[in-house]
Length: 332
Image 1 (cartoon, rainbow, N blue to C red):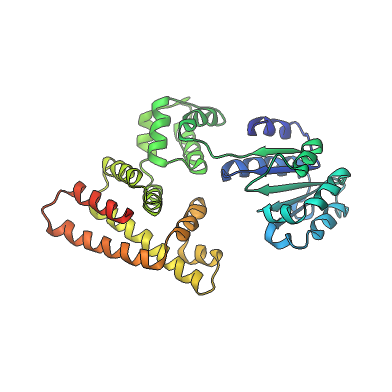
Image 2 (image 1 turned 180 degrees about the vertical axis):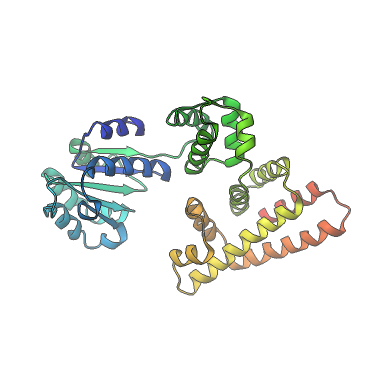
């Protein structure tokens, strides 16, 4: 069953004792979780009927979850919804307890487990499939994005041309949440016009500079010279100048450097996100980049950026060649 079939089931009021949502696409996770909440909590106060936990809070003492599931909800006659996010550790440490629970699940509560990974070959997965449902929320490949945009545009009562969809991906990137926000914005902007065209994307969207610098620094962190040069080329095509590109890279390197310092002095990711005002859409990717670098790397890369900035104002080398040399040095 895919995500859209699942949402149809929720719209029809179908309910399961247990739901497992797993995978690396946060947008799809949000979609299916929202569908369950809308179905289970309609006409009730979520503050009474909804209980949410982070997996690390309950992984060692899973009893609190089972107590919640067995306890009748107060002040409401309908089901309680118990959600465990980042549930991988909770599942691993409470497999047998979950198996026993699913043999006779609560009649007045639904359990949602949100995991990064889910092994369909396990006994627990078999129990889930007997009484509940599991949905994989997998990140789309690049070649799937255009079809997704075509399908998604219909939810806004619009169609989108192939060229417009391609332009949107080139300008915005592959983050589905951001693509969806731009589709929503385009649908409002176009009002009665039914088809989103390339000129509409050009007029309203434009290149997402935050996305491109994230992708560029990620390619550098992965030592992927070819990809880094490709992203650089896209930035140049979209009119970014050398000063802007260098400043964007320096801005990101300084943020990664500061994040390393905060974490090394006992801070956590929440403190980093708050101090550096990390965009939630890029939070996961940001902290993945933090792990790929050490402070010495970041010092060296920042020095390279300063050196290139000086050369851009004093050397006779062409701008593109200078930037390509910079990206190559950042990757090695």
